[in-house]
Each structure stands twice: as C-alpha cells, then as structure tokens.
Length: 132
Ligand code: CMP
Image 1 (cartoon, rainbow, N blue to C red):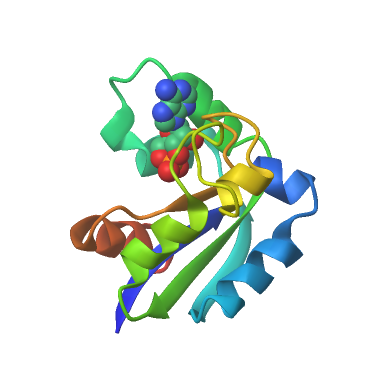
Image 2: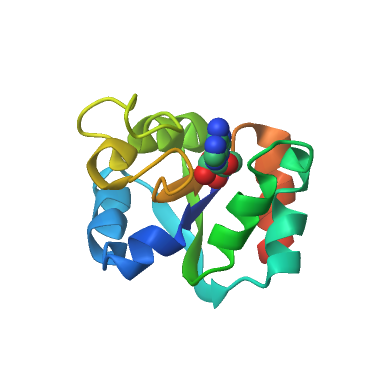
C-alpha cells in the first residue's frame, strides 16, 4: 500500500468544503491514516514549498497557504499518489477535467482547493514534514 499527503487548502476550508472533499476521498477508496487541522505560519509554508522558492508565485503562494486553517491528511491505498492526483485534477482548475476536485471547487491556479504529493520521494518528505 502506498501513502500520499493531501491538503485541503485555506480557500476550500473557508468555503466549508472539508466535508465534501473528505467524502470524495472515502468514496475513492482511500484510508485516512492521519488527519489534523492547523494554521501554517508563513515560515512553515515557505519550508513546505521550498522547492518553488525561485518561482514568481512563491511569495503569493506562501501568503495564501498561511492565510487560514488547512486540513492535512495521510491517505493510503494502492497507487495512492497517482490516484489522488487524478481525483484532484491538474493544478489549474480552468484546465482540470470535469468531476475533479479542482474543477469543481478550485478558484484559480493558486487557490486550487487541494494539494497532493507528486512522487514517492516527495510523498515521504511531505508526510514527514507534518507528521513526524
Ligand atoms: P500545489 O499542488 O499545492 O503545488 C504548488 C502550488 O503552487 C500549486 O498547487 C498552486 O497552488 C501553486 N501554483 C502553481 N503554479 C502556479 C502559478 N503559475 N501561479 C500561481 N500559483 C501557482
């Protein structure tokens, strides 16, 4: 069984979308192994997204991610990383397939409702960042 990190971002928490997103996670056959709600500091958001530190959107992204509460989950199932990415849809909600979480609930390429790890090594690193 594989594990991935899922985040319900501040935009989706503010829009009261925790329930529908978790319902979808359970419908898609994931086990929620760990879950917590936190409010990231700017520094914690910068650390989490350090891989993007040279991108033009880094400052805005880390402001946004520290702007309100988020829900962190460790999801487990067969092929969890790829499956969660399929359920979310691509980064930009305008380009995401109908039925995906980002198409349904995302607002912009930054305020895109959810996050998921993109590979096995990053999943391990991201899970460890929040769940020691
Ligand atoms: P996420 O899957 O959390 O990984 C990095 C995040 O950066 C991404 O979702 C978006 O929220 C954000 N992001 C990626 N590309 C852009 C962009 N071009 N402009 C603004 N934000 C972006």
